[in-house]
Image 1 (cartoon, rainbow, N blue to C red):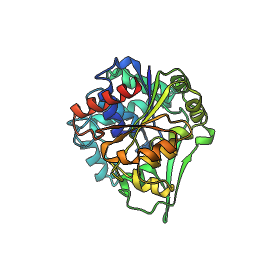
Image 2: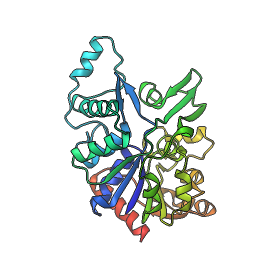
Image 3: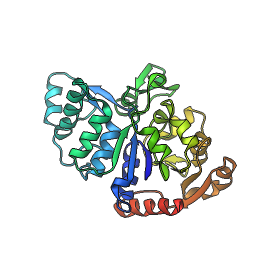
Length: 307
């Protein structure tokens, strides 16, 4: 079994490539819920949904989120009522959030609801939220604290980052199956997701880092940084705010206590000595997943690196 720690878009592409090469049931995904947000009274789990929609073949490829060919009539109607519409929710996407919210209201756990959603959409890989308790990534800027979605979507990441916190992490527990999935895996993959706000919240849940240190599995990470810049999103700015070099070496430093192998892009192969200093074995590959063929090729390189 392969266990993957995952954020949203970049992770979803890699996972889609992976399930083209292995049995989907042999993959367990531990998803970030630090990005979760309540909007219009609905519980939205953006990263879990992006992974689910991608593996289900429903993702809007152009946007990288949401459901393909969705409409936005409800969003337009809410705007007419003066409600905030900076976070776009499509009409078909709303069904997922309505189901999740109503199930949670009736007493179901986020784990149970996530499993029900992925089964209903035909996803054969196991998908676990990192915790059933709320953990929320917060960004402190010069104007105060923002949720991650306020920072990333509403403010488009164009604010000074002073501090990053994972609210609720200290009191959270790993969701059922999370620690076992790490401990009993043949390999653990850290997807090419933002180290601070996608993987960071998962690591902040008590017990997860300990499981990564103790597992006998090979732990392999894919760098989301290529040639000194994030492939997508605000990872570079967030790493810099944490005092990490914006490079694969910075990612290796963040994960160095438990990381064995890192896949880096060919343009960064000159950083090999730095990775070795952290005790991390580098594997060089073409890491930009610009189409399905490249997703599969990168997944194949990962499997080869795992032997």
